[in-house]
Image (cartoon, rainbow, N blue to C red):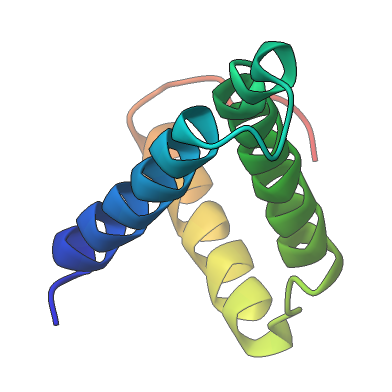
Length: 89
């Protein structure tokens, strides 16, 4: 199932629940109108949480770091040959 279809199904389900709550008087109408705002705020908090968890679990790659340092050294040497001052180490 495509990702966009999953999102659309979720939005339709949430909208149906919201309209159902508006039609019935289970929750006071003044509270029901605020549910989309609460949903958006909750979605933002969830997104920030996922970014934080992703940063905490960010893997370290010592082999890739070594390759990156080699690339930086090669670039510095190339620029020095071209006469560009790359600063001190």
